[in-house]
Image (tube, rainbow, N blue to C red):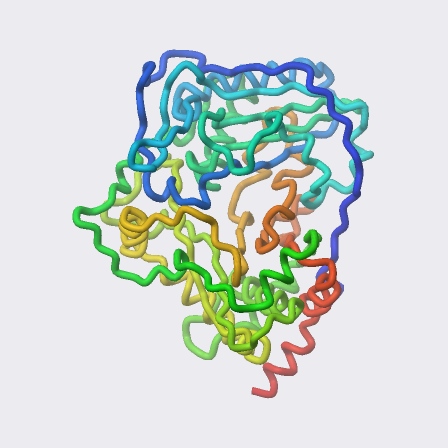
Length: 465
């Protein structure tokens, strides 16, 4: 079964990039906001984990339609300008209100930022465009001396078109997570791409702001413990292991066959079963803990992951086209020893229970919890966070008229060594494979690969129970 998992490698290269021009992009027509206007952001938009820019990159190979290289930037700018009319909140800026919450403000500085750049390299020199590569960082514009995690008074869309010597190009995109979650970002991207492709404004569905939908209740009603927000007590070797050396990014292409067998092995001994995500998350979590040799073995670890709560909202339902944050953080917990010596099915049950715990009432309780006790720092410590990008239409949403991108996704996972990302396979054959990317200390990479690729031990353990 190891042949059903392929370790993917990326090239360590230097990409020389020259910035040619900076283009402010304003809405192409009137918008329902004037100087001094403010827009409410919900408590889900205000989560500390959303106060970031999400950097992605899209590569487009040379073809006859993109032979006029300068038209690429103009096409993207013109389409973005049109789309910023219905998506006008993305032309504002974030500022902090007196209560410490963020809001969208319309002042002197407005609009998105488009950066045009070029490189003397060809796309072929970048190596295999199949997995995130930290050396692609120059393809996403950052301001000189920009502080990490800065979102205040920044353009909410920062795009960089880099024209390569071969005729191909990349689109590096930084989109503020406070304004939209992954599904909302794909909705915006699809509208921008369709508008560029057709030359006329296309919004399907029509964007809906309506952040007041998630107003906290009065008085707030917190009905759950919300372990996802609790402070993590330092009491294990994990933090030292992860942060004492520069993390190494490892990526694996996991075939549909491997996932199916893993799901079969991970079924809990009850009638509810588990999903492919439950099985994959459980397997990654167990392999991670074993590779890092976490001590003490009775230390309580967490696994967190985001759940799209849109389908949970029934009373009332969320309006179609809503592109704000509608994610809740699911949290499973287990002592180290149970993850190491317990079965895969036991761990998958923990993941399933955490996933299914996200209900409509849990969403409302989360909003109310954030109203009373909003965390103001990111918690690392004793946890692994899994981000599932496989449900996003990354490739389908990004056809601006130059065809499907050869790669679409994140650039670099190494700044956050306790994150694992599940990505869709971007290869042309659309095999149903998932690309698993995770950051580990160099000393743990070999062990993780060994545990992750081996199902033999899981099969023998399953048969012995």
